[in-house]
Length: 511
Image (cartoon, rainbow, N blue to C red):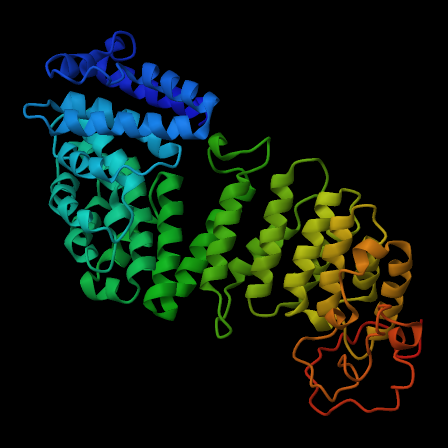
């Protein structure tokens, strides 16, 4: 386990129980001292972590034995009458360390659920933390949490509300959501910014898990979320937009909400581009790149073939594509890649198409091998939608990747060319493959010739392996079979499903 997590948990215990918890054993020492026969309980979180690390250095089996011995002692200690909440919290902190290493401790779940009912906020937070980390959605024990979460969501203490919101993903299931959705909706109008933001995000989680049933349970989440779009804190507005997009996608909302969300997302996108958001959102002088990615994904969720995209959305996406290139900041290229995905999801637009093709070509021709990988991924996404708009320059840039020294890049390029092969360019691609097989047999013989053909091509078609490329027994593929010799007179089957890239100038018979 990383030292960061250990320091975090030790700091949590130190803030809850004081310095005595890590030094002399703290509350665990007091609990163990009062119960005879429990001398093997580790005294303090730091002592336990050191003991666990020492066992790990010996062997994996020794670590498992150590966890097993400690867990038995924990169950004995927590099952004893009169155990205080502080002792339970101290044990659960050590159990979190064990859970972070991949061990399951189901015997402690019931004690964590009881601890969530504590009036001490620190103990309550530890109980909720352990429950959220160890219990998954759909567990039978989550039924015991519903009443506690309902009470904490409506509590006047904001700390209790925040602690209960942290465990909501555990209980947000189609069966239990009706019990907490009303209290969650009230949290959308809370005075604290953190609670409003967290509650808005949880509505999105409920929409994904419950779908259409969410609207039948309570129909006033959408008005509350729409009101949060004008919140003074940008984090609340961002969470509201993301949740509304999920509600729109899962709950089949009206088209009016689609246009309103599109305008709101584009407005936040322009604000992030112009640097209007706080400096906390900047990454190495880049204006809020993660906000840009988040809003672009919202536009992808809203997109449909029938959507009449507002002009504000098109202008905002065009501004993202027009950002200047250069530098080593990969966050900018991540934004551009996400923008490529967004344009392919939106209805066709000529200006955006040209901008996307320029971005893809820039990726492919970059001297940075990482950006070449990005370009191949972008082109694979664009090819199925914007095939007619591709130029010979894109094919040349892809073929140039075959001669790169990075063999992984060559392999990915081969896979991409498999999907790009058609009736007009298959022969030149096969000639390229034949040449490359001579240069690097070990790599390219892993890609049989039939993989260059469309997988759903009719067996009687001239491009099918049975018609064009017959394997030469024991020697791979002969030159005549690579070139499809003696088979050009066979006409292609009508309705052949191979896509055509009309802008490629290669024709059968040309090299």
